[in-house]
Length: 154
Length: 159
Image (cartoon, rainbow over all chains, first blue to last red; front, side, top):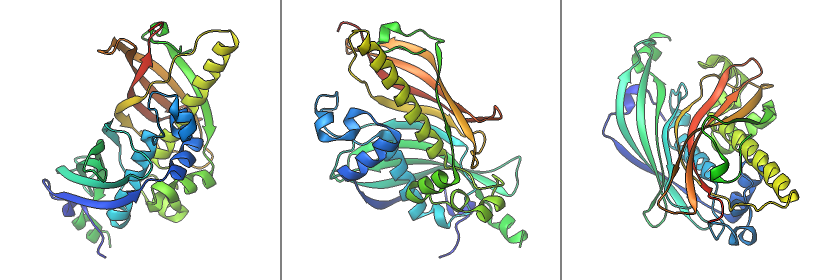
């Protein structure tokens, strides 16, 4: 497949992709390592909590979105990394048995002023479950090489 | 130090919650699972990237900070329980804003995490207050590697 550059993300484009099954085992494994709170560690422990049942760490959901983004486009893109994440909202709990996909909207695309070989794309990502409910949204920019700059460097 | 109940927090309170070394193995293992971009997996690809070397996924940096925060709070809860004090129910995070990965985390880096209370307000639900705090990660050279603002529900005393 061709590499993806700055020019390959036109503003206004919407893309949907991914099918990530959420298992209790994966929720607990992630939580043991990074977010060991009772409602992420097992059904038994979660019952007495605010959530009342086992739910995924919000950081786990964010990591699953990152993986879907890598598999769909970042791994074959001339990505130069991201400066950070402007907004991230956890809207609904993610539970064992859920299936998650990603919806990506390209909000804006602008060449970098300070680094002419780069462009900045601003995306909004929705993580959507099997009931078409948005469980998480995220807005962030990613740097990409510009196609012309990459060709000139060859 | 950061407290357990909403009422016991003050704007401006700061706490160092923990520190963690990022080994090459941990950086690559996280990247394989969640962020398999070449500059998080491979030395040569890292050297050719804008980061100049293999470096940790920003999500890895953030997740390790979450772990430090949870361990810190658990130690506070254990100490409070040992003093016979009541423990609040655990609230959940609603979201984060303005997360910045200002500098890369390279293999061998030791990141120290801290949290600072930036704002507090009551919510429509009398048993919960909303606390906004800034999480910051700084490496062994004093360079900021992580910063974000988070909003978390925290239980109010005696509700």
